[in-house]
Image 1 (cartoon, rainbow, N blue to C red):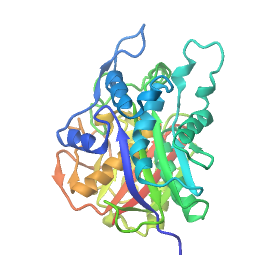
Image 2 (cartoon, one colour):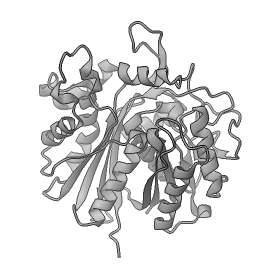
Image 3 (cartoon, rainbow, N blue to C red):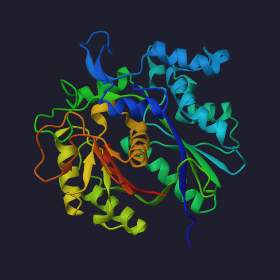
Image 4 (cartoon, one colour):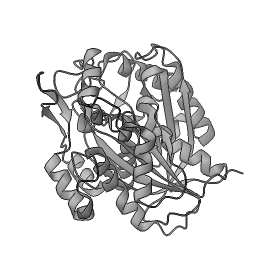
Length: 379
């Protein structure tokens, strides 16, 4: 019999706040971090979700005043997200450090004739792990936009395999000229705040965030909360370097595998936290996959209207918000959604709703045909 794996603690740093409570309260009020920001000097402003740098530095100084010049902007976000968890849980010789990101310190490349050491993901992970005294070698998960969901899966599977006793999973990405320019070259960035699944959607908003979770098999029952990681899967359908499968094959397979392992049927799922980027083909692909799984009637939202697409942080951040929804018995609306713009029916949440949420399905999809899914159970 496999070990039961639990998420018993988490935290996040976003444009809506520097802890989970402030984020949840902002979301209840319908607040969004998406606004116009000047990211590239010689181009117009883009709708993005960006953490205020002055507020970030002020918060960082509260906890790490003696290190104000030692860390990049992204590193400060990561340290702030992980710090309260490390304070409460022991880091031992059998504790894993798992880091999810897509671009890491990509901003260090600007105006540099040579590659700075900090731009390597391994060096970034080692720096954060060393600061908090982790004793095991960091594990890096960098698989496009499914990274955050996959990092939770890696923690679950490695603990079940007996490689580690527990794990700290941390995820983060920051806004950068590199990322904005890349998505803009695909003509994928929306002209306004993004509208996942909406008829008038026209592209994504890029966001930034950091998130952290503590995952363990040693649940005592005395935790403030517990969520069991019941099932997970990641499948690559190898459809295209950037375009999602038109038939949703990879996402369908990921969901099938995760729900099969979890021993949960479609009608038992209480809520779906979907990827929902607000691009034409991603949203349509998801709608097809959910219908193939007979999940079209399950309440569903995308958090991209609140946070933008936070890349390697999105999967973990959105999982945390999903668990908060279950704890508070409240379904959050898919922000900016008005009229269905996909060909298959979906039960998209339009307003705050009270609900009993036990089983959560979290999905993610990304460039290169990668897809991931995880099933969580509130204990």
